[in-house]
Amino acid sequence: MPKKILKKIMPDHHTVKSHKHLQIFGELLHNGNLWHLNRRSVAKAFAVGLFFAFIPVPFQMILSAAVAIIVHANLPLSIAIVWITNPLTMPAIFYFCYLVGTWILGASEKEFMFEASWEWVVNSVSTIGPSFLLGCGVLAVTFSIIGYFGIHTLWRYSVSKEWKKRAQRK
Image (cartoon, rainbow, N blue to C red):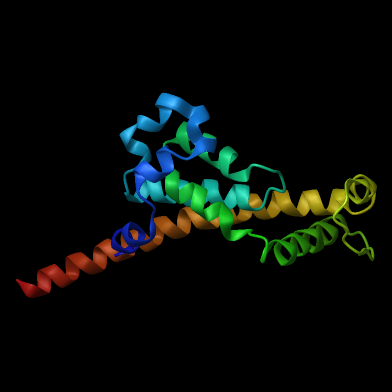
């Protein structure tokens, strides 16, 4: 059952509440609905986390937490899912976003070499930026929708399977 698996891998809510970057939310973190694992809260958490995983901004976790609080998604899970784009996976995922953007715009791919400098970022916004940002937006929305409905479907299937097992035991 997804709930059992998620409970094993999720951090303790006291750990998350005491995180220094989440202290800006203050009393909002005491809402019990942010910590429950049910089909709706988990599906919302996947949607929120996947959306912000594909948005190339700093402080993705804080933005994910803010939206999770607003929509009453499971807070720890929405924050954890953002880490799909971590330093190891980010180059491949964001390059794929760029390719999707060029495909949608019908633009040709431009050769570029990444440099970790502010000057490179400023210069690349005008060259690869439109394709990259469009690809990020499209994939963020697409994967959020897939994640939301995928978790709903998986959760319902799991519960149905458990009910059938229980009925067979009787």
